[in-house]
Image (cartoon, rainbow, N blue to C red):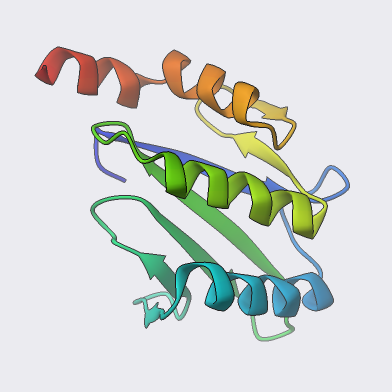
Length: 128
C-alpha cells in the first residue's frame, strides 16, 4: 500500500474472510462494474490500478477469500467510491478499516468519514 492509499476490507457478518459463494458473486459483480482484471503475485484478481483506486479479490485453494479495496486519497474519484459502496451493498458487506480498527456500514458518508481520518488523507492534503 502506498502512503496515499487507504486500505479497506469487505466484512460479511463480522468476518473479513468471505465464504466461497460470496467470492464467486464478488468476481461476477467486479467484472461487471470494473471490467477486466489482472492476476497478482498472490494469485488474486486486481480490478483497477494498483497505484490508484483498485479492488483486489484474493482467494485460497478452498474458495474462501478476502476482498481488499484501496482508495487513492490524491484523487477525487466519485465514480469509484460510489461503485465500491454499491458493490458492498450488493454483497451485503460492511467495510473494515484496518488503520482505524473498526467496521463501518457501506454508506458514502461513512466512507468519506474514514477517508478523512486516515493517514492517506493527511498525506494527500500535505501534497497540495
